[in-house]
Image 1 (cartoon, rainbow, N blue to C red):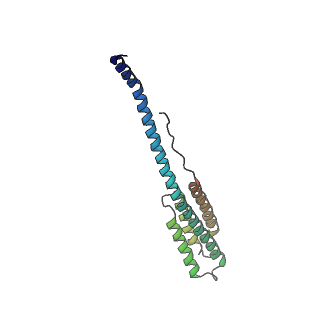
Image 2 (cartoon, rainbow, N blue to C red):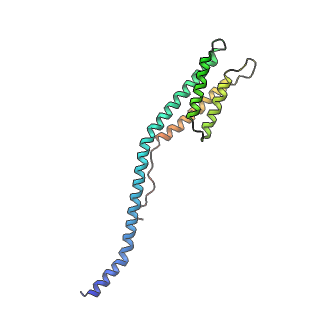
Image 3 (cartoon, rainbow, N blue to C red):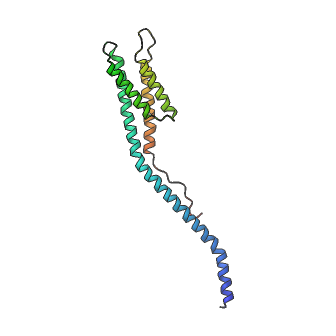
Length: 166
């Protein structure tokens, strides 16, 4: 075969195969990039999930202690109440407030409801007693928040849509 024909065949092959090879290289690079990103997200989730779960557990413990202590304080009556118990309620309230996400609407709702509940615990006889309803609302909001946070912690990492063979 003569060199000019061979050169012509190579040139024709380059024209047709070049773009295909380029697309294949680009698709491989995109796939590699997505795999790296997914690996980083997975590693991050593996580090953050236990921290998030510990936060949920701490919040649950604080909320349980606050609601049970508030109910005990409320039921005990004025004669049996101590400043130490009220100080504990205030401490728990502030620990919870500092644990909540100030950017979340439901967390802000819980914060307001806790404040009202702790304030209402010292209702005066003859005035409207809102403590029982506020206590129920605090428990209800707490359950909702804890459930949402649990769902967030246990949510699996979803790989991004990856284009194969572009």
